[in-house]
Amino acid sequence: MTTVLKLGGSVITDKDRAETVDGAALDRAADAVARAADDLVIVHGGGSFGHHNAEAYGVSTTEGTHDIEGVTEIHAAMKALNGLVLRRLHDRDVPAVPVHPLSAASRDTGGELTLPAAQVATLRAEGFVPVLHGDVVAHRGEGVTVLSGDEIVTSLARSLDAERVGLCSTVPGVLDTDGDVIPRIDRFEDAAEALGGAESTDVSGGMAGKVRTLLDLPTPASVFGLDDLSAFLAGETPGTTVD
Image (cartoon, rainbow, N blue to C red; front, side, top):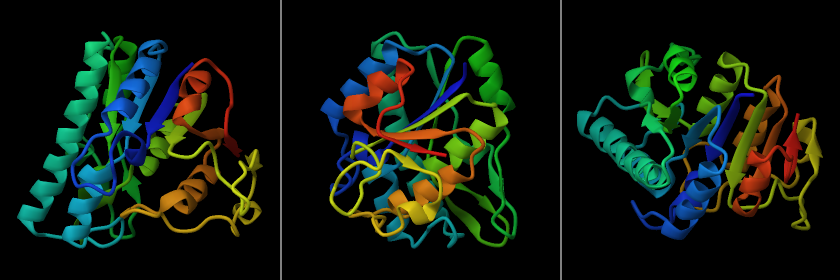
């Protein structure tokens, strides 16, 4: 049973402090993964490593840049965070390997994403845990644009025919206007009133963007907090189910 897991950038980093890891949270996430690393593909967000750098160069999922310094700095920041995630997993004997989207993905002039997944599928079949991350990718007519972790999750979920999809966030699910978890979302309108912009710097759409993206999946997805990561990896459906 293939599971695609997204570790939110705001979970594993301090998004208000540039290039700062939340070590305790990352350790907790790595502990949970180490207990359930079979047939797992991990994607992590950019957090304070990616979003601050992307904002500095005016790069988003739709607005690109040809500035080589900007391209290099954003990608280098994401590789640095990826390395820190891998180190935590390796410390727990998880056979995690990096897959960098800049080397594989692209967008056409209309923004349509192409992300080949054969290398991910092969690595998984050979017993590895592929770890992808938000990145910049080639975009016809724009230079490079941001590829969010959420987009990677949905693309891989389709390509790999994933049975389970989970997004680990800083909140215990999608919250309504009273701050309570919405158990299930079948249409964006079900939660539109409660979905606002991200509180910290985020060039990838915040919770509203996550929900819109997940609603397009053929597979139900779970949005949950770090406290429920182990439960999700054990087969439960904590937080909000987006279907």
